[in-house]
Each structure stands twice: as structure tokens, then as C-alpha cells.
Length: 359
Ligand code: F6R
View 1 (tube, rainbow, N blue to C red):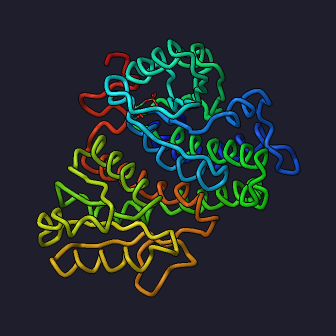
View 2 (tube, rainbow, N blue to C red):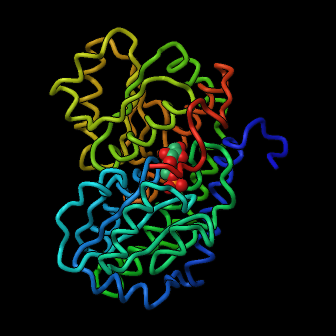
């Protein structure tokens, strides 16, 4: 039931702070110690490489997960689009471990990969929102997202839940393998800050609606740019905008723009930059300048600690690794308001179904 909400998507965006708290309660002890099945951790510990497989938004959550597993657990991690992996399997390491990210647990493209993984006898984990779903039943292990049903076609809370759970799992694995970064990472406190930060962002709906009207309603295309983990979020931000508002949007590695795509920038093209990582903040800022010099209408979404005068949207500070959990929220809301104010059916965009059960 969507209660007083006009669309499920807005309700689901608003539920994200609680989903973060729920995941912390479910998977962390009072002292912040991850409570993850020992057998699962042992199986992951035995692996020499992780392969994350997913489609669409779940693939995007995997791109963030790669950073978390490599940083916290120090294990090489690859991320693959399931429909590609299924028919062009990359060379595998000696002891691969597979992680399937799938909100519905029913995506045919991802299942096709799991069938092959099972045939080859490799261990796997499905991270899903739906208990007893096909991919949950068929994988060796399952972790549930506990995000509550996601009804809107555009995935929101499942994305942030997947990232938070990947962080918990990476912390658990890193602790077992003795990684100091993992030991020092106070995930319970961080997820608490994330929940509070998300709340602050969803409380700024009026500002985001205004930005959607000023920046996105007038254009039939837009760019989201960033580097590293900010690039991963820019892909998800662009997908949200495309699928519900039909604006042609691209998520782009900001440094790559000038190698060709900047030719598309003309007067008033919206270019939105994510700046949440200290190492690349200056670089993304100059890439934004380059587009501005060609007439782009730029907007910055910046972590507080990196903000300068004139920045547009300031995000509360959490550990840089977890910034995607916050930076995606304004992008979800920008997509929402663009769709809403165009009079579109936000929850049921054309040509799309909630779960894609054909390849
Ligand atoms: C986009 C969206 C899709 C799904 C994709 C995979 O908002 O929802 O891109 O993420 O179809 O679905 P699941 O996660 O159910 O495997």
C-alpha cells in the first residue's frame, strides 16, 4: 500500500534510511561485529577472486561492491553484466566465488550464468530481496536484503541495500583475513550516519524538485559524470533518469569526456558531476569546467568535506567508500520529479517490467 504517496517510487526512496537501520540490526551485533554465516565466509576466504554478476541497477551496485571488496577484504573482484557473461564467459581464476546481485531473484539473464556456475561446481552467493526466489534456491548461499517489497519498476532501495550488504560482507571477510582497513572500519557507526544522511537528503524534496524543473525538464538529454566510485554512481543516476523520464542520459567517466563525447555538449546541456572522493575531486571539477566552457549547464553534487563556494547540492560526510549510498539519493529524486512533472507514470515506465524473466 502506498499510503499517502502518489507513487511507490517516492515511498521506496523515503524508506531507505530504515532499510539501512534494518540491515545493521540484522547483520551486525550491538558492537558492530558482522553476523554472517561462517560457512559462507569460509567459502569466500577460500576463493582467489570474486565474480559479481548482475543486470541493470544490480550490476551498478556490483560496480560499487568491487571497490568495497577490494578495499576492505583485499580480494580481486570482477563485475559482469549477466547477459554478457552468460554467452562470453571471461577467463576464470583457479578458485572463483560468484556473487549474484538480484533484487527479484528471478532475472533470466543472471540465472543463465548461475546454471553454468552450478554445472561447473563453483560456489555462489545470491544477494536478493526475495526469499525462496529462483536464484536464491539455486545458489549455494543466500543473503536477504530485507528492504521490503519494491513495487516501482525503477529500483531504488534495493540498490542501496545491496551496497550496504556488500559493505557488511566485505568487512566480515576482511576481518577474517586480517585486513587492518576492515578492522578499523566502524560499519555500524557508518551505517547510522548513512541513515541520518539519507534522511537529510529526502527531507530536501522541494530543492530537488526545483533542480529537476530547472535543469532536467527542459532538455531531452543529460550527462552524469564522476571518477571511480562516483563514475559507478553516475551510471545508476543516468539509468534512473532514462527509464522513468525518457531523458537520454549518459553516465560517464569524467576524464573520458574530452576523448570524444564532449563534442555532444552544447548550450544548456545538463551536466551533473558527483564529487565525493578527495583524490579525484579537483579533476572532476576541471572536467565540469571544460563542459561549462562549451555552454553546459552544470550542477555539482558534493560531499560536505570537499565542498567549495558555489556548489549546488551538499551531501553529509560519511566514509568515502559508502558515499554512493548518499550520492545516489538526489539522483533518484531528480529522476522522480522529472518524470512526475512530465506527467508520466513514474512507477510503470513504458516498455519495462519489474522482473525480466526472459533472456
Ligand atoms: C532499473 C531496474 C533494472 C533491474 C534489473 C535487474 O531500475 O530495476 O535495471 O535492476 O532488471 O533486476 P534484478 O535485480 O531483479 O535481477
